[in-house]
Image (cartoon, rainbow, N blue to C red; front, side, top):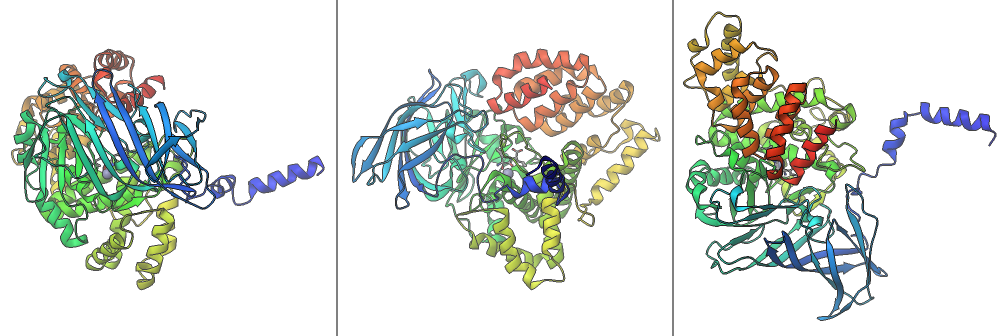
Length: 620
Ligand code: BES
Ligand code: ZN
C-alpha cells in the first residue's frame, strides 16, 4: 500500500469507534489474563496436599497430587507457580508413578512463572514434590512476639487474588474449581485449620487431615497454623483463636448464627455445612477473607460493642455471592464484591435494623465518592481491564460500593420481594460455577429484564458496568441519624456551641465516623484540641474511629496524636487502615520523615501485600 494510503487508513482507524474501542475489542471477556493454566485442554478436578509446616525455614515442604480431566489429544498440563522450589515431577496411571518432564517458563512480575508438564497419553494424575520460598507472597510467617500469646509462631495463607501459586503449583484461576484433601504436619501442640471440614476436637498431635468436598476456586484454598483454641457460638458457628482473645471474640461475634439464619431465610440454604471464624494476629492485611467454612478475620474489628460486625456479615454473605457463585476472572470481581456488599447491607438491616444499615450505606457511598475522585476513569468501570497488572494493585471501593449500588437500583426497580426471589434463583442457577459479567448479563436478560421491560433495561446495565462514575439517577443512600450529626457539626464549626456541648453519649461508632469524616480538611490545632479534650479521640480504642481521627491529625499536623499514630501503624497491618495514613503523611516533607521512621520499625511486621503497596507509595 502506498505510504499515503496507510497513513489515511491509520487515521480512519483512529477516528472510527475510538482507539480505546479498538483495544477493548481485543479483550476477551471469558479469558483469565491472570493465569497461564490451560484448563480447556487439561483440567485439574481434585488435588491432595501433603505438606510439612517448617517454622524454622519459613517453608511449606511436601507434595501436591493433581487429578486430571483431559481432552482427547492433550499432552501438556500448564500450572501457575511463583518462586517455588520444584524437586521432582511424576505422572500417575492407575496408581503407578513414573517421572515426568517439565519446563519452567519466563517469570513475570505480576503473574509468576508458568510450569509446563509433558504427559504420557494415559496419565491421569501428576505429583509435584516442592517447597515454597521463604518470601512467598501468599504466606505470612509470624514470630511468637507478633502473636497475642507470644509463645508460639503463627502461619496463615492469603491466596486471593493470585497468591495460591506461591505455595502450591496449581491452575490458579477462579474459573477452575477443585475439591481437595490435605495432610498437614505441624510442630507438636500447634493446631492447623483449613478452608475445609475442620475437627475442633482433633488431638493436637502435629498431624491434621482435611477434606473439602465442594469444588472451590484456588483462591479459596487456605491454611493457618498457630496456638489455636476453639469455642462454639451456635449450632453451626464457632471461633478458632488464640486463647487470650477467644472469649472476647465469641462475645463480639455472638450474632453470627442469627446472621447465617437471616441470609438463609432470604436467599436459600447455606451450602457449606459449618461456618466458623478464625481470628488472626493483627498483621493480617485484610479485614476479612471468605475462606469457605472458615472466614479469616482481623482482630481489629473486636471493638467490644459489635460496632464493626458488618465485616462478619460480609464474609458470611460471600458463602452465596463469591464462594457458591464465583467470578470467573478478576475483572469480574464486582460479581463477588458488589453482590456481597449489597447482601451485607441487607443482613445488617435484618439483624440490627434499618437505621444501622442506612448509616452503613451512607458511609459506603462516601467511600465510593472518594475513590471515584481518585481513580482513572477507565478503572471506574465495574469490570476494568486488568491485563498485565497485579489484581491487588487496582483494588478499590468501586467493585464493592458501585456494584452494591447497581444491585440496589435493580431491587428498587422491581421491588424487594421479587428481587429477593430473583437472587435466590440466581444463586441456585449458578451454584458451584464460575461466571463472567457477560454470563450474568445473559441470565438477567432472560429473566428479570424480560419480566420487567418497563423497569429494567440492558442499556442501563451496560451504562453501570462500562462507564466511569455513578450514573445519573442512581439511588443515593440517606440516614436520618446522620442528618442530625450534620446539624451538630455545623453548629460546632460555626462556633455556636463548644465541643463540650455536643451530646455524644448515645453516639455509635458510625455516628463518630460520619462526624469526623465530614469535617473540613483544614482545622486549627486549637479546634482539634477542643474536640480531643472533650472526647479523648487520640485515646480511642476503636480502630475505625482512631483511623478517621489520625487522618485529620496528619492533615493538620496535630502533634499530640503522634505517639498514638506510631502505635497504630506498628500494631496494625490491615492495609485499608494503614495505607491512607501513610498516603496522608507522604503529602508533606515533615510527614514523609515520620513515615520513613515509622515504616523502618513497622514494615517488617506487615504482610508482603501491605509492604508492596506502601513501598510503591514511597517511590511515587
Ligand atoms: N475477598 C475480600 C478480600 C480480598 C479482596 C482479598 C481482593 C484479596 C483480594 C474480602 O471479602 C473483603 O472484601 N474484605 C474487606 C471487607 C470489608 C469490605 C467489609 C476488607 O478486608 O476490608
Ligand atoms: Zn468481600
